[in-house]
Each structure stands twice: as structure tokens, then as C-alpha cells.
Image 1 (tube, rainbow, N blue to C red):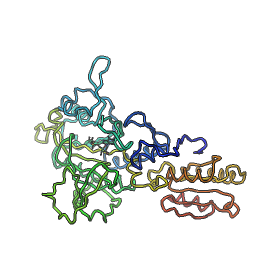
Image 2 (cartoon, helix red, strand yellow):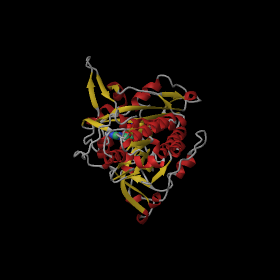
Image 3 (cartoon, rainbow, N blue to C red):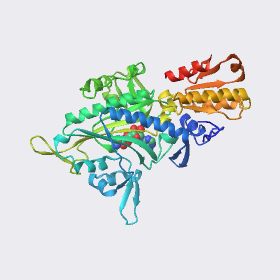
Image 4 (cartoon, rainbow, N blue to C red):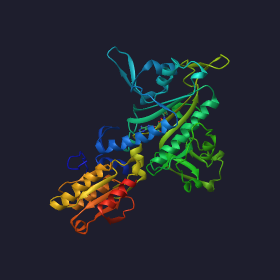
Length: 438
Ligand code: 5CA
């Protein structure tokens, strides 16, 4: 993509409404634009990141055996009356009436809708287990939408739902999602610590939040100091196996959110305990028959007796993640994207747009990069070198390739790694193979 043609409305000044780095940088880098409080438009650069995040989430859900569906954003109020949550949900739920005066709502989550789908067709233990998920916009009329996409009112969530015959089966499904979450966040370059959590309005008694430690986080969390040294690797998971050992391994060191943390019954001594701020990027729940019982989603056991489905739900804050990723990856000059989610693999800067030789060389390299399948944003604009460097640093592409008159005379370009800041002169062929290798 040529920057001269790209829609990248970068801001030079810090927007005054933004209190935290990620919100500031997303606005400055032209990723998003606010439509109204807590509701955002996604511009080309931001949408590319959002799609990359979605792709990783989808791949890991599919790998774990979850099947993608798509449920509507608007749901009928009756469903929520059946579960009893229509009144419980209070003002956070956006309630709507259609032209026939029927009560509808913009879904804040989908437990009821999923239960309604499966109760019509899943009747026997032979139909189980099942894991269904979708990636869809939600609406919660938060009292205090803030920090940009981090606490929005309209936001994109991946929500999965597990359906099992009994508690043991439900725990197996929980473990699958637990393992899938470990992999999902590691693939984004994030260290997300699974912490015992309060299920809140979703219900149930087994629940974990996946938390990234960050000062901008909204939760107070408590954990064993050993977590500071633990590195979460990209574990290989065979989803046919018993995954309880993985669950045990990654919950062995104490970690809990403040709603769950009780100093009186904490299993580790205070000297080993760290308290910090955390950002919740995922939340998983096992709630048994909380929805299936009132909504009459029954399956027959092998002995023929009908029992309510055992269910769990599993959320990831897809549109919160670009913000969370920036909180974990930025410096004073801008964003530093991990490769797996970067909007482009590299930026190509032509230092002298007016110089015919520079232009020819940069155009040529741009063509080669594109032919090699490398996604590149080519700054071909007639701007000062300083402005070009500042824009590239701000938008945070992993590598920058600089074509300038001095290098050309020597037959080289300069490649700068955004994260390390290390610059190297190399031939265009070497630059091409460095970028292809990743
Ligand atoms: N039904 C369950 C799981 S599918 C559920 O709704 N869980 S949740 O309430 O914890 O939300 C799941 C994830 O969505 C959270 O972990 C968080 O990352 C994200 N999320 C929740 N509220 C917001 C919000 N207001 N803005 C942005 N992301 C949010």
C-alpha cells in the first residue's frame, strides 16, 4: 500500500480526551475514531490489526474443536425473561422496541441465544459434547466507558459456549478453552496470566480471567511472585488428550482477582504475594445448568433420564486487545506491534521522493516486496525525512526499510527494527530475505 493513497489520518498533537497511552496512540495513529461515548469507527490501519487478532482467535478456537456460528446482535426480550436475566441485567442492557412494540435488546452476551439454538436440536447424550463460538459485536451501556476501546459500550467479543452431559464433561470443555486461551495470547506476544475470578452476572462457580499486568488495567490482582519469572510458552496441545495436567500446571502458582482474593484464606504467605493492576483480555466460566434448567434445554442420559445441559461460556475481548497490546508494546515514539498482529510487516521509506534515482529504487523494492508476499506500507510522499520517520515510529510496523541517496550510492538500504532500534545497512536482496524469513 502506498501511503500517498492510504487513508491514515495521523494526529500530530496528543488528543486531550485520552488518559492512557493506548487510547492516545490509537487516535494519533489513525486507527480509530470515536463515534459517540464508548463507540468507535475502525479506520484502515486499526481494522487490519483487529482482523489479525480475530484470525488468531479463530484459528485457536477451530484447533480446539469449537465450531463457528454467527448469532445476531439483536435478541428478543422473551429469551432473557426465560432465564430471569431480563430484569437482573439492569441499565447495562440496551433495550429497544420494534415497530410492533415488541421488546428487543442489543445483546451484551449470548448464553440465552445459544441455549435456545441447542434446545431445539440437541436431545441426547449422543449429540454431546459440542463447543460453539462466534465473533460478534456486543453492547453494554457501561456507566463509565473509558480508555478508548478498552472499556467500550459497543465492542467485539469472541464468545464460545460448551454443551456437555455432566460436570466431568463440562470440565473437559473448560480445560480445552483454557489451553486454547494460553495459546491464543502467547501467539499475540502477550503474557496473560490465568487468575481465579468472580463470575459476576454470568453465574457459576468456576471461573478464570486471563490478565495482562499493566498500570492502565482496571482490575486489582494478587499473585504469587513466582509469576514474575514464569514465561508462558506456546504449548503444543493435543485436544484429544486429558488436558487436566495443563490446567493444573498453569494454575499451580496462586493468582486471583480482587473479588476472589481473600487475605484471610490466601494459600501463600504475604511475603510471596504481589498486588498489581491488570487488564482482563479473556474470561471463562463454568455455570452448569444456570440457563439450561430454566430454559428447559434437556438431554437424555444413556439410562433415558432427561437432564439439563451442563454449560460454560468463554469470552475474549477482541476489540479490547489492540488497546491491551499497545499498553504492553509501546515507547515514547509510538506503538511497537508484535509481528503476529502488525497491520503491515514493514514500512518502506523513500527519503527523497523528488530524487528520480531514489524513487526508481524504492518503487522497484516495493514491487519486489509485494511479489514476495510481504505486506508493506510504502511512504512515497513528498515529506521531510523527519516526518516520515516519526510516522513510521508512531504506527509501529516491526521493520522499517529506508531508501536514501547515500545508501543507493553504496548499493544498500537501511533496515531498522522498530523494537530494538537496531539499524543495519544491507543490499536489497538481503533486506528481502530478512523480511521473507519471518
Ligand atoms: N458470556 C461471557 C463469556 S462469553 C462474558 O460475557 N464474559 S465477559 O463479560 O467477561 O466478557 C468477555 C470479555 O469481553 C472480557 O474478558 C473483556 O475482555 C471483554 N469485554 C467485556 N466488557 C467490555 C467492554 N465494555 N469493552 C471492551 N471489552 C469488553
